[in-house]
Every structure is written in structure tokens, then in C-alpha cells.
Image (cartoon, rainbow, N blue to C red; front, side, top):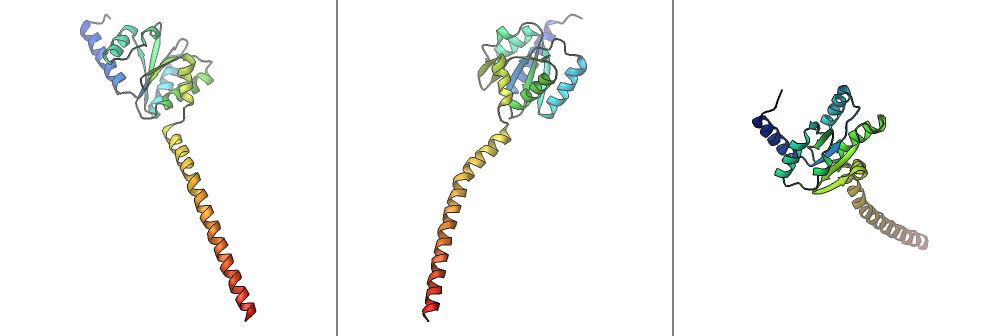
Length: 178
């Protein structure tokens, strides 16, 4: 079935909205991946607010151009799937793809990624999967902030303990003198 100009325009508009609303996107190859495997990956991506879409390269390039995203055109060659990170945790979908790749001989290898206005190629895109999640970052920050507070509490506790021991020693001395 041939696509009409209005169908292409509609597809470009949908892709433009997808690119605009995502916090990051990852481009992958998917040669040798079965439909069942792609559907399994899609299910896991849904669990982390991600989406996997197989795109037509020319339409994706036009959608990116409409969003002002530059430097990605060269990556749209051959069969390309795009993983959209739709939540604030942009690394979660990349973790899903990385896990799939580790279990399946890199069948869905990273081509590139776009995160916070930066383009990451190949291995650098895969390294985004190693970024801590938002919750992990909050935990690290909280732990770092608790350290000095905990140290201050221990210091104050030590000072109070010394004061109590000194008062107790004075009391004992006065009792022995009487």
C-alpha cells in the first residue's frame, strides 16, 4: 500500500510530537530481532515509561528538523528503531535495551542517543544506561548530606557525654569529701 502525502505528513507530526515530548531518545539497530522479541522489549519499556518505535528514516529526519535537533541525520541509515524516554528518568529505557543486548548478543545495538541537547554515539550512548536513576541520585545526595549532620550529632553527643561525666566526677568527689 502506497503512502499518500497526507499520511506522511501525519506520521511526521506524530514523530515530531514524540521527539518533542521525550526527555531523551536512543537509536538502535534491530537486525535479527524477531517480532516477539521486539514486543517483549516494548512491554519492558512500557514498565519504565519508554516506547520503542521502528521509524522511516526520512520521516524521522524531518521530525527532528522540525524540533530543531541537529547532528542526528547521519545515524538514520538502514533499519532504525527509536526508544523514547518519556519520564524524567532518561536512563531507565537505556537500561532495558542494555539488558536485552547482554542477554541476546547485542542484537539491538545502540547507534546514538540524544539527551539534554547532546548527541552521544555508539558506546557513549550505551554508557547512558549506566547513569544512576533519579531515585538513586536522590539517595546518593541524601547520603552525602547526612554525613556532615551525622558527624555534628556525634560531636555534640561526645561533648555532652564528657560534660555529664565531669559533673558526675564532681558529684562523686563532693560525696567522698562529706
